[in-house]
Each structure stands twice: as C-alpha cells, then as structure tokens.
Image 1 (cartoon, rainbow, N blue to C red):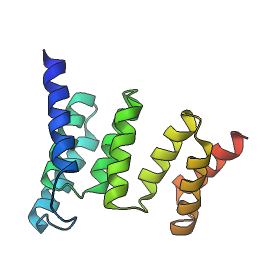
Image 2 (spheres, rainbow, N blue to C red; image 1 turned 90 degrees about the horizontal axis):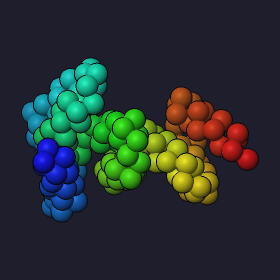
Image 3 (cartoon, one colour; image 1 turned 180 degrees about the vertical axis):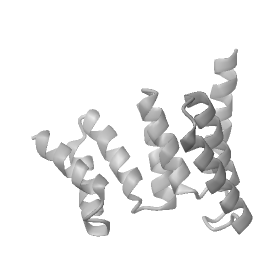
Image 4 (cartoon, helix red, strand yellow; image 1 turned 60 degrees about the vertical axis):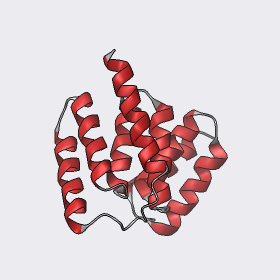
Length: 147
C-alpha cells in the first residue's frame, strides 16, 4: 500500500513538472531560498526515503532547481532505479541544458545502457562548458576505459 502511495506521489510530481506552464524563473526568491534550504536538509540526511521526500519538496518549491533535480537523480542511482534517475537528469537538463552534474549523471547511465555515443556527446558539451570540472575529467576517464 505504501509503495503504491509513493509511486502515485512520484507520478503527480513528474506530471506537475512536465505539464507546468511556469517559466523557469517563475519561483519567487523566497521559494528559491526555501527550495535550497530543503535541498540542503535532504543532502544532510542519511535516510534515502527521507532524502527523497525532502528533494521532492524542494522541487515543488522551485521546479527550476536543477541542483535538486540532479540530487534526486543521484539518489535514484544509489537506489538502483536508473530509469527514474535518468528522468530527473533529463528534467534538470530541460531547466539547465549545460548542467555538468546532469550531463555527467545521464552520460554514466547511458554508458551502463551501452549508449557510448550519447555519453561522448555529453562529454563534448561538458568540455566546452566546464573543462576543469571534476565531473568532466571523471567522465573522460570512464569513457577512455570503456574503449
């Protein structure tokens, strides 16, 4: 029963984000600040269910919070739910098409799925936008090892 309630909550959240007519900057500064604060609490918790709930709340407060979207994607990776992780990375990239964390997360999932060309394309974007980022060098190393 609890699983079906959580699944329904995720579906509602995804629908709210996907069908939202709000522009990316629609959140007020107070909503953005609340979203960041909630996200920080989520990142500090060690309980996956609590972290997931808090990250979902952060996204509701500011649907354009790409960092919260990426953090939720990362959490789903840790929870071994790659399809949901990819969905959140994709949403983050809709908000911020050059978000290094989202590009990296999506590329790693693509590599695991055998989509090396897509991962390489993400790396190319990362090299242009943030050549010195840790995520860029890590992805480059992972891709080099996959040859």
